[in-house]
Image 1 (cartoon, rainbow, N blue to C red):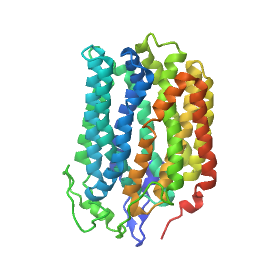
Image 2 (cartoon, helix red, strand yellow):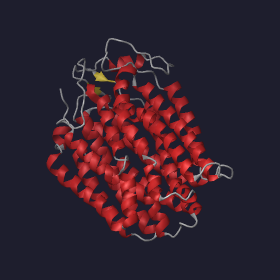
Image 3 (cartoon, one colour):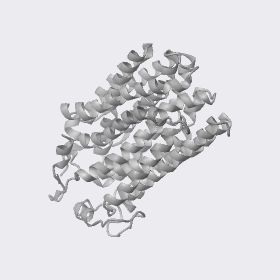
Image 4 (spheres, rainbow, N blue to C red):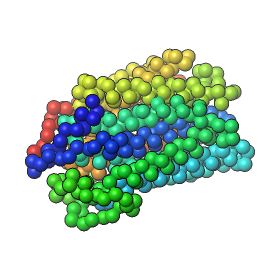
Length: 449
């Protein structure tokens, strides 16, 4: 179904038929997002156990991601703008390099801590510094991938197309936790997933450089050719694809300009709710299953819960959105309502089965919500502004992880009801605000000619 959705030709304002994205190119874009998602969720599934082994308080483990998230917010718009001038492929490659180096250095820093060469505090500080490379440079890839897809799909199909790309994250969050326990190897221990996913990233980068044609920058500087820093194949095919793009240089997009304000607002509030749930989940499993004294045994149950959530996310993005033909508003509102219900259930779950089920329901909701708000942002602007829209989307997503996971863990550490109560309240606010503010799907997805 996904291939069929992307195989329809797109008609430009000039009346020409735009070539569809080939299956090989979609597979490469999918692999870029899949690799980073799987690596990051594998890391998340072992970090509660690593933090416990290093005798580091839970909230400091969550805060270790904050600097990286802040850099993501700052850098994503810069890379998105650069992708308009230097090409999408170059930025995807740069993002993969940031991921590879960051994962390798993060694994090395934590390994030094686990074997006693560094204190727990020093190891965590080194981890935070290495993680910042992902926030600074890894943020180049998602806006480039989103802009590549959004600029090559019609408005009526963009929610499904971007949902397919978003589902690569969902699949990655299944693969990462599933593989993480198998990657806890005798020599490197709990840091095995970091090293192995860095190597997988190298393979993905090589495939991207060799198989994805260089793309001529579309906006702005239409008349100038910019060679991507990772030159390889000829870019003549992309020139033919892009020859009917709009000639008008877009203005600089701001987060809260009128066209984007409703979508950015729901993306920020809903993203904070999702980030809090993800921050709490691993520690919740350790606490309610009584595994604090044996942290190495927590990797499996934490991975199982994250897998259940990831499978539910895939169900939303591969099944419900295309089957129900949900538009941005419908996916956003229905998703946040389901997510709020799942979080309420998670607050009272006390065994592995109820925790996994509750987390899966919440993830199903967020799996509907995230593609809805992303495609709403894309559809709110012109085709010429898709690079900037991708940067805004990536920045909004990153902003949710600056302090929300640590705040959620801190509140959860004081009272379960404080943590989960705030998350449910955020979901309710998003639903009410979105009901009155988000543009109707019938109007938003209408083709502009």
